[in-house]
Length: 176
Image (tube, rainbow, N blue to C red):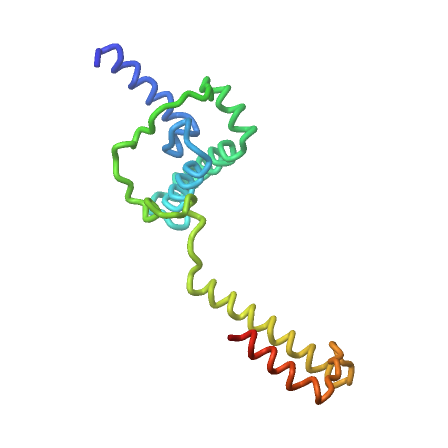
């Protein structure tokens, strides 16, 4: 790499470090999912209640992160901001920078495309079980109340005793 190319790369990195993208530590071509992930990680790190930094420094850094995320999470505001800093969103096919790196994400190689689309946890399954039991209990209660009041929900047809053996024979043949 020539000296001129090195200076140009360094100046581009320095220029991006002072932008919202630099504050969040993402590339200007980052997807909304990557921006959200970076914001969540940094907001946990710099939240005034959870960081070891002095309160005024943590508050200032946290406010910067909120400002950056508010702008970059809105497509309209992001487009205006990109135009302001001179970043062009022309669709050019480029290989990702981490193409050769192995990802440490637990969702790599998974059938789930989005890391938020995941299997249900034990608590969620239990909540669905309780919901199903409640639904069945309500259904049984409605049927019991209907029978107790004497209102038949489905009138049963009367079957003559002569037809009953023939029906049983037909049903047994169908089961075989």
